[in-house]
Length: 343
Image 1 (cartoon, one colour):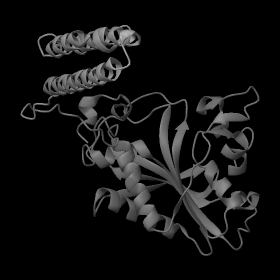
Image 2 (cartoon, rainbow, N blue to C red):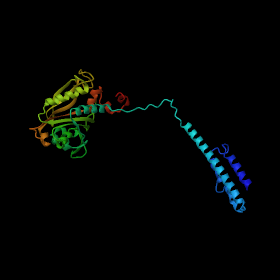
Image 3 (cartoon, rainbow, N blue to C red):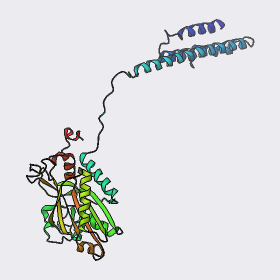
Image 4 (cartoon, rainbow, N blue to C red):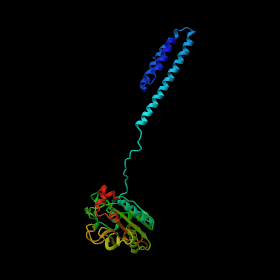
């Protein structure tokens, strides 16, 4: 039996070399062959019962020594295989830092939102609060509480989009409803701007779109005059477009302001000479404004004998056009990367 144990030791140690145990699978097969439950060493130990009492301790000690030797050799070979596998993986997954990296193109703000952020900064610096309101609006807020009752021309079906047959729920045609919502919920005095999307059934051209963005502004306090309105708007325009930017105010009519006006900015494309962008006029309409109508103040529960205010609504796309000298409003919505990359 001693000879058999020595033979197992010799053959197993030879088998655990790199040539015979080249892979983890080979090594596992050798472990099963020599040390498994039906392996050669186990078969020898099963014959221990046939030995005499004097031989049994000697053979048992020798069998343990053989097992320990094989286990140690097996573990050493397993570590060598694991190290070789790791080296292979590191070599296969190595990153060549000398290869030029891939260029990642980072996005940036849309030119219209650059203009909006600039407007917000200007008005917040003047003490205004920025409000947000619903795009799906009630006609009560879009028209009635702005002094445009049933039958008023501004309620014509072609001006906007309705959700119901009785024309009570609609896509807002202006951000002016936020005037009323602010007057109903905020304490006086009030200084707010309300930017957002609005919808009208306009024909698409260089300066019009059925969906566009508007910024509504409003001030209500004691002693507010038209001079405050003009001074504020001229200050805003000069901060946006530079000192000396030319504006003009024209009389107009809005149901929720009295007196009312429209403010134009000299065309950035032609400098006032006349071109396709300004339709030959030399000026581009930028916003409508005026003193808040006393009826609007009364409907919101504000005494027009004590308080007065002004309001305006400015087209954000036209602001961006003047800010970045964009000739056609449609470029803002077409998402052409060749155009957007300029900003």
